[in-house]
Image 1 (tube, helix red, strand yellow):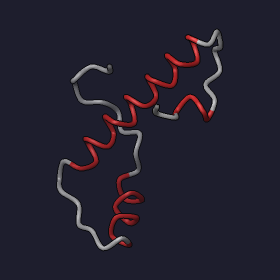
Image 2 (cartoon, rainbow, N blue to C red):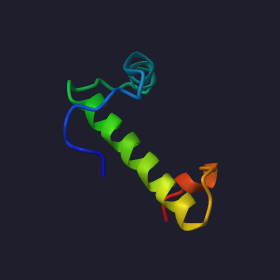
Image 3 (cartoon, rainbow, N blue to C red):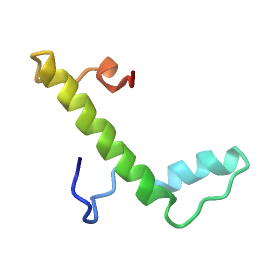
Image 4 (tube, rainbow, N blue to C red):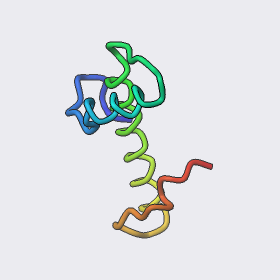
Length: 66
C-alpha cells in the first residue's frame, strides 16, 4: 500500500463535495483524505492485477474488486 505520509491529492474535493451535497450529505474534514487514500489503494490493486496477468497496461476491469 502507499506510504502513510501525506499523499498528493488525486480527488478533486470540490467536485466530490458537490456530488455528496446533491445527495443531501455533508462532508467531514477528513473525508477527502480518506477517499484519496482509497483511490491510491485502488490504483495499486489494479496495477498488481495487470502485472499478474502479464500486462503493463491497466484496463477498466482491473479495478473490479472481487
